[in-house]
Length: 51
Image (tube, rainbow, N blue to C red; front, side, top):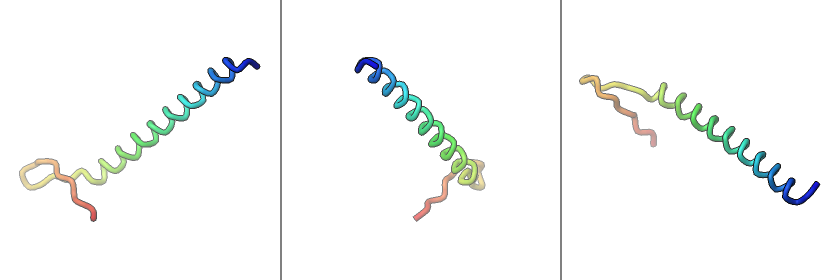
């Protein structure tokens, strides 16, 4: 296997990994958003502050 082929394979694997990580982060943020999505008495969305 030529070095250029190895490099292309590594790029592809890295991009696949980055996409998977991004999808996981997006999914976690959406889960958090669902549990944190609270409306105040005027119907405005507010987010509780976690300390």
